Image 1 (tube, rainbow, N blue to C red):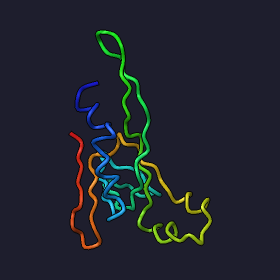
Image 2: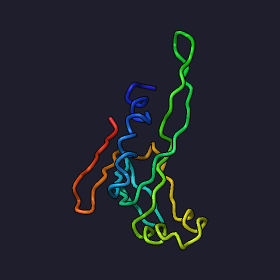
Image 3: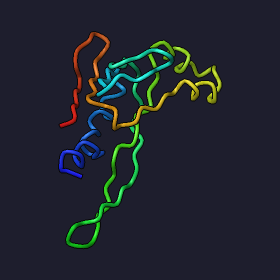
Image 4: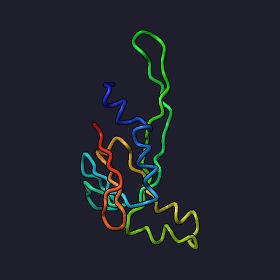
Length: 126
């Protein structure tokens, strides 16, 4: 694995996105088109939830290893489902069923914008 791959997966690089999430909606640019509810998309506009991470152990060439926390996936709610998801009168199970998970490897960039379209945060993989 090269340095860019290590950096692009690192949870510390993406934590600014998590910190900005409550203040706006996300636009996720993908490397390749993804089928989302029967529609091919290269950009997903959504309400993004904090990333899911995992601990990964890497072996070093000269012996030993190190443990790293990496972004695994991005839970998201499509804008068409946001009103239903946000309504706490709906059951938690029904609301959770609206959450999709996008593998981090498919993400090219994430932009968080406020309600007026002003960019609050933009992160792009190297």
